[in-house]
Length: 356
Length: 152
Image (cartoon, rainbow over all chains, first blue to last red; front, side, top):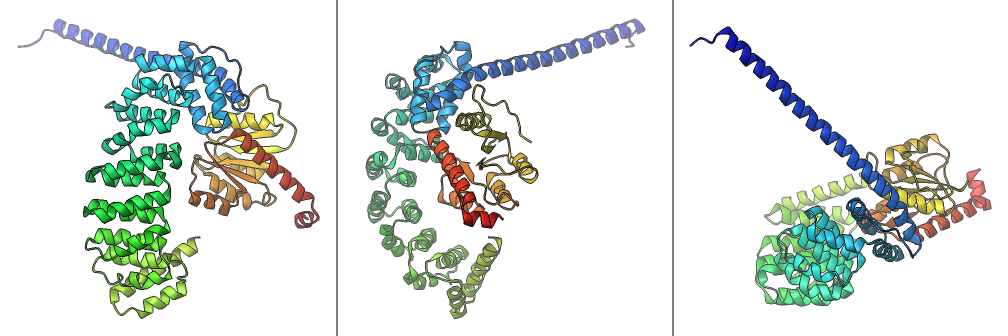
């Protein structure tokens, strides 16, 4: 079938109109987005420009009066107030909390918690934590069980800020079971709560925890008092044969670097699992003395490269082992692998020295 | 060249001493500028390490430098090294501000030539006191006979 010229012209015209229409809609949308973005930025500038000086002044002087924060301002000002709280400490934080209460941050946070987007709810949770608002803490408790890890962790953090002693019994069991919580963030908030508050409940939680949860919980002992942390790891190591628990325990003893852990890590140098040996060697390198050179030298001829390498590094790190002593030790080795690995570490040390 | 300097209003900047400030975060820079200006210091704010390094190589030394560790282009530690390597700036006191509190980070800053290390979150009054003490100590060592001989 052949189309007549009239139909062809109509089809062409319709296509041209369609293209012009689509282009206009696209340009209109781009224009609208640009204008609304600019308006939003201008509004933000206006609100931040009004409130930043007020919060800055409050850092040094306990405020007695503040203007009322409007709902429109709160969207931009709540994050600003939270941010101010993140980079100051001491009296400045007390003053900021008072400034927040006076201008009504608590009311806006409560509102955002009920009806806000996820971002606004996160800000509200953080604000409630910084306000140390005991009345609002009830609204945070159910949020610690939220399936959204950001919301639940933020709620846990806020509760710890408000009252760490009261919050820890609620939060520690969650820490063990929430695999979606960032371990670095959890450690940071436990550190912020303070070793004096965290140590006892954390130690008890580890002692009661199922074996599967003990390795993760042991990593958080960095936030506890070191002597108590080493003591509980020693107890667990004596009672378990779980390889993951042993590996983590030995790693953590080296990391905590408390002399009470030395005897235990020495005893694991000949552990049948080479990964445990690896952590024990590294730990002895951190905690050990010149007397450990002989034991570590025995590992230089291991069939596993990483065991040889960590042993050479550990010897080099021991106090009173000079570079001359290291060279002498290398010369005394009969095993070729032992000589090579020491030569490698000596070279690396030389390169580090040149770089420094 | 000093950047963006929509600094705090309503605080008189004193004629002296001059404090150079390098901080990339606009809110933090505003707060530091306010705190220092409130104490009567003349404050010259910069938004990144590159700007302050240019300033070090072209302008006269200030009474003190406050520098953030984490900045775009050039970090605070590099800025401190650059200050220490510049003639006439060797004895300018430098306070390093950092969110990192590990021993390693502090040692790196002091090795580079920092005189003080303040971790964030910081206490504003304490920072002001540290600035004052360093400027006073630097001024008194500059007038002592030993120091003047060294400068000469």
